[in-house]
Length: 338
Ligand code: CP
Image 1 (tube, protein in one colour):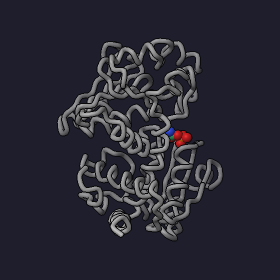
Image 2: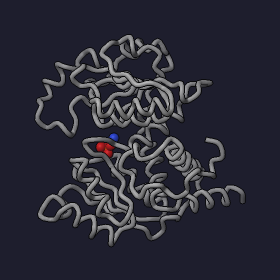
Image 3: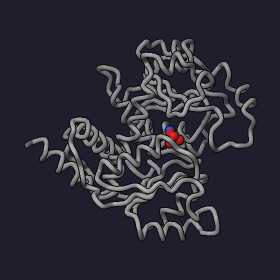
Image 4: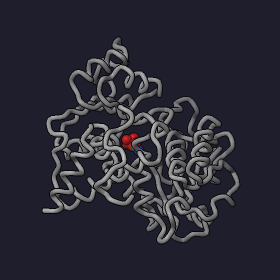
């Protein structure tokens, strides 16, 4: 990440941001670089209007706090406007197909972001949309969270440690956030471990992506129920044990499987052997279930920076897929030189 004003690809190689598997490491680093440059500029009081008069349609099939707020604020900070199409607010899911919705909305808006129940819905939306589609989470992955998370990891790298030697341990269930963290950390050549019960390990389909990444970029990927594998972690990450996508299994079943072994608490953090190991959570958290208050609110928690970096990432994604990456960086550079 050398010159912050120069990207390797100023025009995305794909129209849509559906999965980070569609992009190589250089492209992902471009998105990181652009997002961080915009963040520095805005935090210093700069204003941007590179998406002036552009409209973002935000389609939600589920509730959201971070994704909704960060996209709406991000679009406004780039000079554009966002429409919140909350669950039940549009015909989607009624008698209008996802393809028809995509064709109509993309005639009126410049970018679509959608959080969907099923990954195939985001694929269909992108296929029928004439404008870029950003995946705001599906049952398969959460790529906007991925970008914010890797920015957060870069922001909090252990002093003197090259980023491709970092170890990231995800504790708990193989949620789409766990899968996404595995995809982006292995794409960066980092060492990834999922520590959880065998029935909740990432599937082979996901692990094949991680293993292919390690062959290209280095690093490693493991799933384990052996607590010794936590040793040496620089980052410990967890997510809820019963998420949005499993509405059938009772909470008690999850609690029996995960508690107490997989709760991130002081004892588990001590297993890292690293007093500086950082704690991450995509949020929302079920406090004192997957993580104790002591850890979430403690000095090593970077969960709040991580939440703020959802906004950092969304601005970068909106500029990149909105086709104004170069114009945005040019404007930042010119104004900083004045
Ligand atoms: N982490 C995350 O996606 O949060 P929301 O569900 O609130 O958007």
